[in-house]
Image 1 (cartoon, helix red, strand yellow):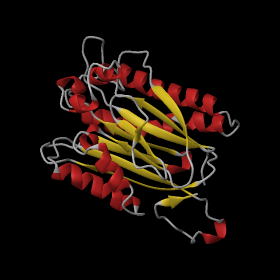
Image 2 (tube, helix red, strand yellow; image 1 turned 135 degrees about the horizontal axis):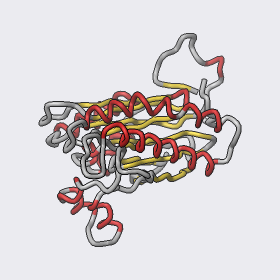
Image 3 (cartoon, one colour; image 1 turned 90 degrees about the horizontal axis):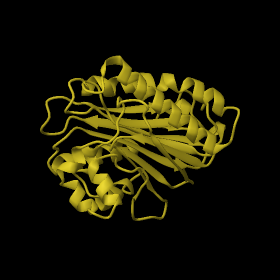
Image 4 (tube, rainbow, N blue to C red; image 1 turned 90 degrees about the vertical axis):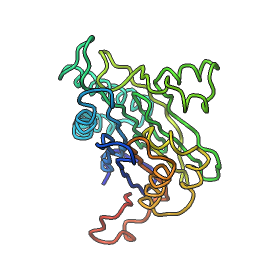
Amino acid sequence: MMDVKFDYGIEFAGRTDIGRLRNENQDEVILVPEKGFFAVSDGMGGMEFGGISSAWIRRVMPLIMDPLTQVLKSTEDIESAAEELKKCVGVLSDQLFSEGNRPDWYRFGATLAGVLLMGNKAVFVWLGDSRGYLLPKYGRKLRQITDDMNVAGILVRAGRMTKEEAAVSYASSQLTAFVGMEPPAEPETVVAEVKPGDRILLCSDGLYGMVDEDEIAKIMRSGDDPDRICRRLIDRANENGGRDNIAAVYLKIVNRKPASDQPAGDTGLSFV
């Protein structure tokens, strides 16, 4: 049973992979269906404790959301929900900074890209350059909901660099915001309407940096098994070089099934 009211059902899966060149997997997936929240986190490889940071986020983010879910039970105002979610991620980041960073010395840092499902909306939230995508039911093109919080992203939005150029530019590795940054952190949110048949993908740069968006969309439309789709996305990233750790969370919005249709004790990938 979800703590936050969502008008539809959802099928989901999440996976991470070490890739082909790294010695450690610093990517994490966060699956909290009872709170309607899903996310990926990518530990920053240039920091001493990047992997510890993403693992900490995976453990702490659901706890920080407890007060949020209590608030959301009493409101259907999606903008208020987005603002409260933004505050949660800001608190998460500021707390990580206080645990071991200084303005002139960073040891902890990671990205976060997540989505909260509420009503007939998806609230995307992010800090860093992990991405959230929406693929409409009848759409053939991915819609990137998040903005990359890195130097390359700034140049793309200013029209000084194409997305294709950004993908191979060193500027894409220069983050302008992340979980653990000097307070106050300023995560961003976007509210998108969703309906049955729509698909959502949250992923680290180890996926979107190795597989172009048209191919990602094709794989997302390739079947009904969320776990198989995650595995196919990861396999393709590795086939293309697997230069980084890979994280993928895939969600498909479905019509809500009557309670009588749910098998007793079902622990599969669907929930309503």
